[in-house]
Image (tube, rainbow, N blue to C red; front, side, top):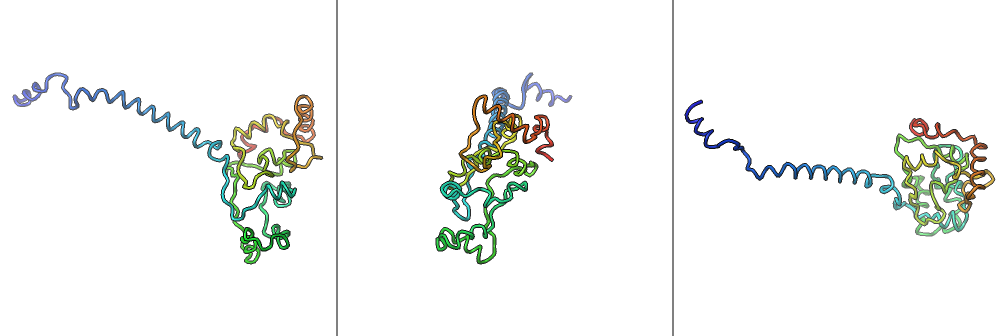
Length: 235
């Protein structure tokens, strides 16, 4: 080592580094901040991105201000009149304009609220309804499998007959579905009760438990192992 290099090393002295001593405190502060940020991000994702907080209450503006409270509630229109595939297919179809005009060629046929319906009728262009109850594309759900085995509309859609504006009332999360699949008895109704009847309530206590067991047997609903297997909903 040359004399000049030796002099430079000695001038720094032992333990001398590029950063000042107070920089040593940045390490623990940075670690705490990093852990705190990670916990914050995890919390936001767990609660903010959960279906329970993102989907429940979703009520988009529809192209036509259709009131279920009026049609299904006050007028008593059966859900299956408009959603006429719900007992036959996986999907509950949206009504064609023809279905609306079956009544509205005579009723409120000049109402400004129904202008989009009349325009659709005239042009042949379907009304672009906005889907409210959305499941991930990797989830298999079949409406007919549920309604034909005693699961009423109210179980998933709540009192839709009281909604002027339809909104998503249930989370439709995997945990929510599994709660029912593990113990469906209290969600079943006899076949002599309309599947669309919003007023019917499952009996409580021993009577309700006995009815649930009977209906599960009568409807030949699979055992819990199948009902909660991955394949049932992820095919």
